[in-house]
Image 1 (spheres, rainbow, N blue to C red):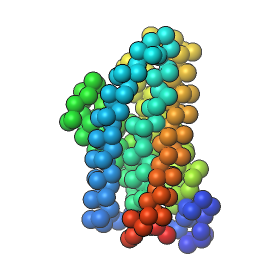
Image 2: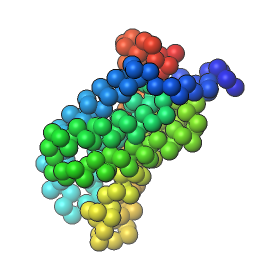
Image 3: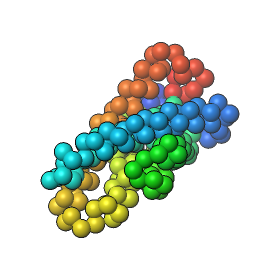
Length: 200
């Protein structure tokens, strides 16, 4: 199967696990850029939270935004650890810029990145397809709720906690999964991914 083209523009080729300097730099740039996005999105979350005072799970409708670097970076550099690296650094940048959750976002970012990383690992870092991107986004959402529910919603009941999981995963698949896939494809068409396997 080595070298055979995969559906949705992915690849089943044996992975090159060596990180080049450009891989590190690009992943860091992606992380920092999304860290700024996180910081701005924190305010959107804060301003809209009162709208969901009677249904806390509704807050997670837009939570997929926080999971995008864990999908975008791996789709571009295709290296083990890219999801964890990008999501964690983005969370750190967000914390340094200031947010309502302080350093807790770093722990959240760690779990979100790990959730996506496990999916890419399960795919043996070979399948860079749309289904893999969607699954990685869902994995990141699982990491998100594993962090959030025990800390912020431990007493709201099983039904509402289950609703958080469902809404978070749907948001992740739609925003972090499809959104990241389309973003990487747009970057590829624009010719800014020269030198990366995602440009193949």
